Image (cartoon, rainbow, N blue to C red; front, side, top):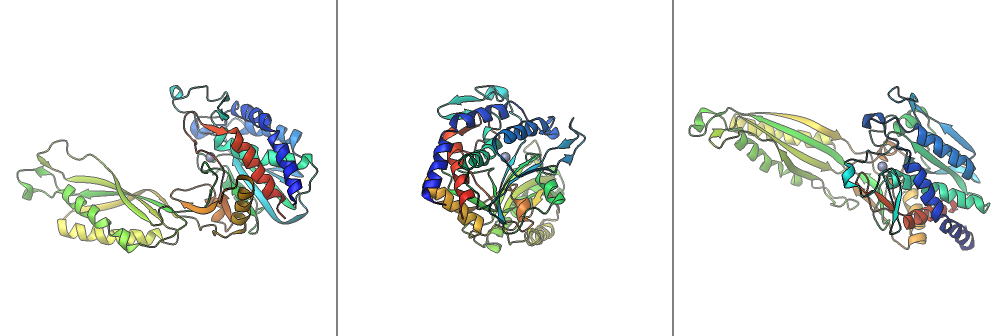
Length: 412
Ligand SMILES: [Zn+2]
């Protein structure tokens, strides 16, 4: 691809500013809430988008992988895979966006109606404009611009529109991955569902999440005669300080992450006795652990059990462990994977920003690809307003991200 080609495509995308806002306005007016959020699903929004696509982008194939779900009037949750053919199908470039939104939350926290797009200071406001319509409209307008000039794509480009991202993805990408093996190891997969304001973060990895509830049982008694009971609170306090040694036992570092280490933090504590002169017979504490991929959570758990055994013996208490959340991290996308390099190149060309591969502490939908050995990254240039009131995205960033996709789609 030469500079002249790109310049023409960029100019065309610059001319789409109003069209971006128009499409965002129409999408925002169709609230696509899943049944878990008391909604009717994503069908109306999917139908509207398919019509828009039919009028604007000449895909070579559009296929549905709808997931049956009798909780919604349509009886299924829409999942769409649209492919535009390139000169070669040796690899494909995929961009996956999700159709569903989260509810607006408390309406009095919004300055404007969440389902009516408002424009202010170069931003569009409304529920879903960033999460995840920003990620849907940008690759579509990139393809439209390339098509307007009649430029051929070097490789196939696929746009994936999924349901149910906000409530677990069972009826969305998980369903697609069960139904088809269309995604290949050599493909470049981009999920524009998180990002930073300058677009410099290409998310490639995540830590395992392990929340542990620790219940300590002793024996309640009057505080003036402690020997008559067993102080569960004291035993739990000793355990908390002992848990700090997890930082030394699992002290591996990975510079992709910030912080680059596993974290083991005591957080919540349930109330025990209401009065000062009672020895508590029960104590409940919680720890939030974010563990680097490569350290099995079973190993972490085994170390914690050793510590609880010691505390049980020393204080005569009984300790039980349970896990409100436990999710082993998917294998990371390598920081030098082709998708990272190609995307970083396009980001640099368009924004002049040096992007780098990074890991985050929580789970993303890209993990479903990574678990299958597919190299997916999460990227966009957004202020990260997802799920907040007055959600917005910059018009400038929609235009810019569409250019990044155009650049990427045209890379030889
Ligand atoms: Zn999202």
